[in-house]
Image 1 (cartoon, one colour):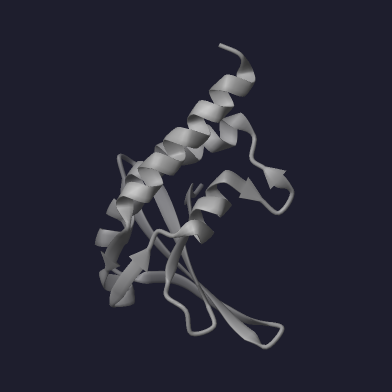
Image 2 (cartoon, one colour):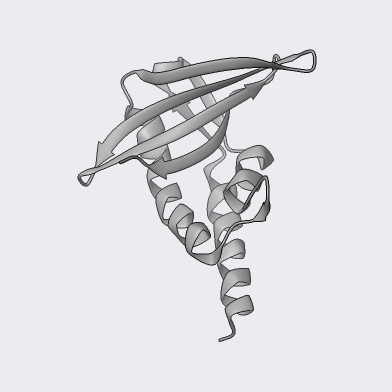
Length: 124
């Protein structure tokens, strides 16, 4: 299999897995976190373009844990907000140790919009 084919397959697998999630109730945010195109786009690409194969593969593995982190995180570990133009953008982080790994989910909202999943990563 060619490297481009592997990359394409992992992108398709990521999209399929991500779209099946829909939304997850997050007790620490007292509401749902939506898995929409914002988070999917951020999983697949960063500000510089498409992510590397290894980065994308790592994020695909971690997406399996994202719902567990959101469902069971007992508190918000970080909250930031800033003004982008005339719009307030907010970010929240929740963390959970799973299988001896500290995992962090980042949730974002734009203006008065819904809170949506934005990222998942290993910490430390």
